[in-house]
Image 1 (cartoon, helix red, strand yellow):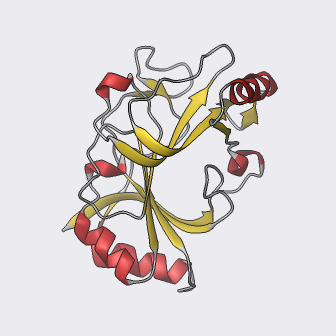
Image 2 (cartoon, helix red, strand yellow; image 1 turned 90 degrees about the horizontal axis):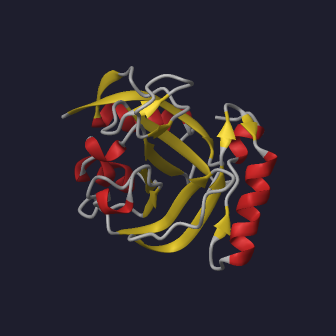
Length: 204
């Protein structure tokens, strides 16, 4: 079995409940949604600041070996399967291999793929489409990006933690979006504010 992988790197998780933890990021190539970069593709589903089109074919063993090498085989470390949409390629065998090697296994998904049979330790869903189009039914954390003026979401996914993340414009945090999202959290507990700290700290 081979997987199309965009990049593998070792860094600190910058957002969500697990922010600040050490993780290997395995970014898979490809997505099932159309995204817009800059002013291109006006009819795209959502804005995206990540390049996930290019990639290389790697076996599961090669992915795990690289993850162990770049993390220095330290314990405990998480692995975050991301993309694009990682649920299009990730399978139970790769998750099991990382688990056996001592990694906490996590995924960041748009929620349009059923992840229930993968055996993951942590599931983050960040919806990019309307709620009725989501397939995944449960998550540990549910995270929405919000621009100034957007209301509180009405999720159909059941989650342990509900997060609002202010929109960025390129590498720049929008102070008005932060103020707006802070207000949403104050008016709508148990929602929690999640800042994308990796962007303003300039880390991967």
